[in-house]
Each structure stands twice: as structure tokens, then as C-alpha cells.
Image 1: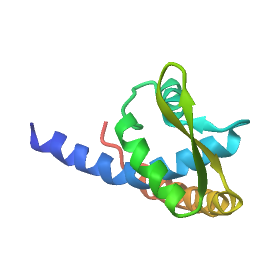
Image 2: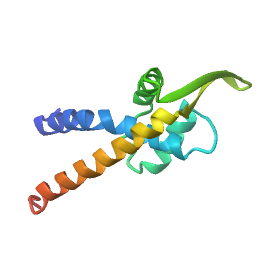
Image 3: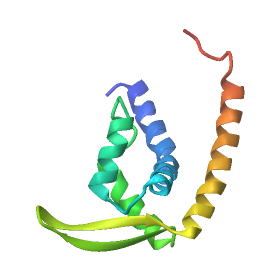
Length: 122
């Protein structure tokens, strides 16, 4: 792997770490009913044309972490077509945190956009 690709992969991994949690909370806040992991992953894939940002394998640890932090509720239900499914819903605390994270995201995005303006070397 070239050095440039190695740097890009590392940067993308670090950048995605917090974004995945933010996107999962936002997705569950918009959901009209409880969602299970694979269902969430398919929804995200549909909205990620390059299918590079939200890797399915990274979602499950983040879902568990958000649940352990009290930001999501979860329960397990048997499935007629396979193993039991764990369903997730956002909690009131999760909605509060989502609002805070969205504000932080907008502030951060605006700062980065400002700093990167005119820095492209195309």
C-alpha cells in the first residue's frame, strides 16, 4: 500500500470514529419504529453511494456503546428467518446528546470549511 493511501486510511478511520455515533443517533431519532442492526446498516448503505464511510462491522460496537451509555434502549426479539434480532430506539438522553453533537458538528464543519477554503491544489 502506498504511503498516501496509508495516511488516507488512517485519517478516514479517525474521522469516522465519532461520525458513526452521530449518524446512528440521528438515524434512530428519525426512525418511526425500533430498528435492528442490519436494518440500520442497509439504510445507511442506501445513503452512502461510495459505501465507504459506514462499514457494517463498525456499527455494532458503536450501537452497543451507545446503549451502554444510556443513549439507546435495546431489546432482543426472535426472528422467523434467522437468529434473534436486537432492536434499538433512542432514549431521551440520546436525543439531548444528539442535539449537543449536532451543534458541535456544525461548528466543527464550519471551522474546517473556513480553514480549508482556497487550500485545494487541483
